Length: 514
Image: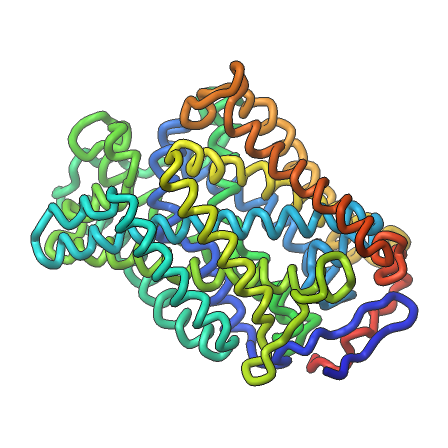
């Protein structure tokens, strides 16, 4: 496998299928990874519980730091289009150890969330079957751990095969599933407003401007809690950057796709959440969003009163969203593992590229195997541990996003005042986004020490979410230390050098189409 290598910095291509994804395809895959239908139905209720009618405002606040960080990602990608993204960029800015931990944060987050997404897909699969065959007992099959795990592994296997067969197959698969969920979510919101106008809503509330004003929230702690949830619902857009070596216009297209992904999902979230609140109200009645039972799965509960006989579309939509996210999420950890192996930060076996499909086969299989094993073990041992681990992902998300944002600021420090565009894109935006996420990282760590932050599980009075979040980071440090002993060249800076941007682009990937 021939690759071009830049002797100054060590950047080089990895043999992936260059030029196989355009702007639309990258944006669709980005939206699928965020999984708007699944994510919003799981988070709308908890956000409403924290901030009530200011839910749209909190979603907008959660959108802002993601957009600011996306500017930093875009600048780094323009300078260094490399599939290692956070790992590569943080290494270039701060050195190998910080870069390794940034890569670990991305890999750990995405591998663990794969298991959660697969588990949700199982739940909605059996729910869909129960609705189709009008047999409520079919829903109970997902509660059987043997059936649940077997079905989950089947979903994971299909997603792995699609990912292994390359970006063309992935793109075609995602066009169908993402298009379907965007249409259904839009239809859901439109139907809600139609019912409100016709006087057929459950407990209608007139839409007010203060719904979009975070200052109208009851307390700052409520805003912080709601913000931590809204940050999670935007997570996944950076998958568009990990595809940069496979994208047409590798320096510009991934950054544009990331921005388009964040903006599109924000619009869907605000539209659907506003419609839900306006239709159902905030009371504790049968369909009110103040009802704890409704908050567990808002879209499922409101599907029948809003969409009538078409309510099954919501179940299929959330299933499609979970399935789409399951498949597209594999892209991020596999490309990051490939890059980490390629630059000597992980075993060389992860660098294998399938000669036919030009995909990182070993990295894909490693990601899905670990995720499948984790889910299977946790599903049998403790559902509380499984879901607390997913809650702890918020810590990891803020960790590696903020590191990458600060990497953008530091790497471009000689260029800040060259132009107003540089000042805005390379300093102000990523700095503010990084500070916001770093503050949320610290706040979440403190809050997660309280067992009430998660399932209530604790160890000697310390919340399980905190222990799991810190445990994931410590495991990364242990693995990093072992790799530094086994493969010291990367950690001595011999594979990727630390540097400052001089205004020129790195040319290790110049053979890729731009």
